[in-house]
Image (cartoon, rainbow, N blue to C red; front, side, top):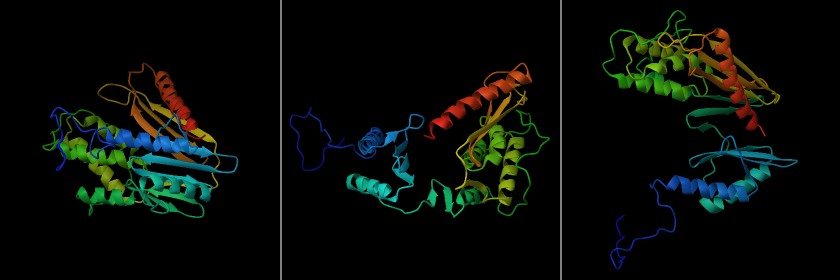
Length: 295
């Protein structure tokens, strides 16, 4: 580091010891999280074992939870006084900015009503359609052609593979609120290294599908129960190149969808029964993880 003007150090082999973490250093994020977590723990909050960015405080009459993403914090709970008290504590240490009721967070739009909470990525989706140059295209009713089996074919390779990587990368983030494109995105993400025109056209079909329903998302009802319900399935030998199967599962809390996934299995299954058992094992792991977050 450069010695600040007006400060002289003798002898020259001495160094400066900062009293707090400097912005931009690789240790900064660790020190920030350490200070924040210690403050929350001293205020009676418990850190979740399954997700260290989740802090919860539960009493006989109140429940408060907060989730941390870098320096953005989302609060929720059934006790307004506890949330106000926590904001006061955080403001006294970090000078926070209160943005009010959650409406927009990391590209996710949140809408509140008397029936529940709905989330979507409409703005993000419209930006994706515009940046892809398909704002005036015709829509399609499905994200993928049912008769198409994507594989490493011999069609013409893309002249600019980065455009395909950019497109699929944005689709992956869109799956945060769009489980209807999870399987298609999983298929497209297999060909990041050497995409072809066939793969690119399949990715553009997803954009055409999204144009027909950019505001589709998830709804969490206030009247939903807390029962955890899960489903798992496997598509045996789905991958044409490796003959590996595809695992798929989803989990509901009451009527609200909270977790979903589509992923190629790590080994080749010799029967459909073996593929189903491997999918069930993955779903069981997710079930344990989800239940550990429910407190």
